[in-house]
Amino acid sequence: MMLSSAGGSGNLPPKISQIEITPPTPDLQSVLTVQLQSEDPNHDRVTYRYQWFVNDKEVGDQPVLPLAGFRQGDLVSVKVVPSDGKSQGDLVQSSPVRIGNNLPVIKAIKLVPEVLKAGQGVHAEVDGFDKEGDVVRYTYQWYINDQPIDGNNQADLDGANVHSADRIAVKVTPSDSSSEGVPQTSRISVVINQAPEITSFPPTEVVEGQYRYQIIANDSDGDPLNYHLIEAPAGMILNPTSGLLEWSVKELPEKKVSVKIQVDDAKGGKSIQQFVIQAG
Image (tube, rainbow, N blue to C red):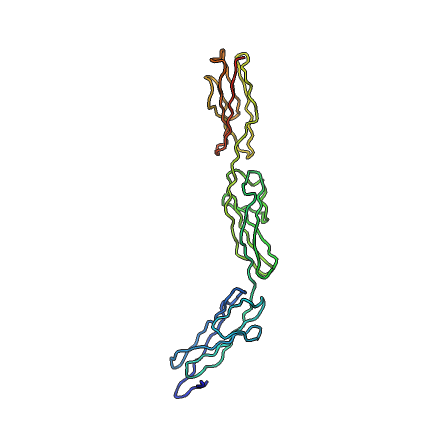
């Protein structure tokens, strides 16, 4: 049975009052649909017939149109005819939409080296892609202890900014010649605390009732150091900040005296030195 466009017996055809393709700014991953507003004077149920066009060539007749397989820059439009089952309304054509750019995507971000040390530079390795094969550029926002580092949008963080126990992360934004992709943030990497190292060697004898030992220790993180006596004879004194060990004694209680000292950086890093003092 053929449907008329005017109808009979008092039936009036439906009418489309508004037509719009969504999303209005699609890319090649989009699936287009049609938003319609229509009315039927007789309050009949309205159905629709679709004709999709890409660059004025008909490509589909379904309510949706997947854009996979088309090209960036293609123009897409749709023609729709309403029907109430008794008669057809007038054909209405949408405004065209242009297929836009597929956004570049970041797949992974890795901070290297994997073990971060104070004073050592950090590099961000980024794995990303662009579906159209466009050249992808990246901009970087570094964070140390959740605070942004201004003035550096490059892949490398200067080691001068890196201190022990710092929490470091980077947010990376991909872009191609047309648009920016969604930013991604790396996992937080914590700069390890390196233990101090005692580099001096103690004298082993008491000379004329005096013992004096200037402890020398280095901390590659640049942390201030504290000096402690763990085991020592009575009267031995260790300056906790300078590391100067002194002992005044007239007579050794034993032929040999054991001494144990500890140097720490107050962050969990420590070094211990043990030695024996003999009678002079």
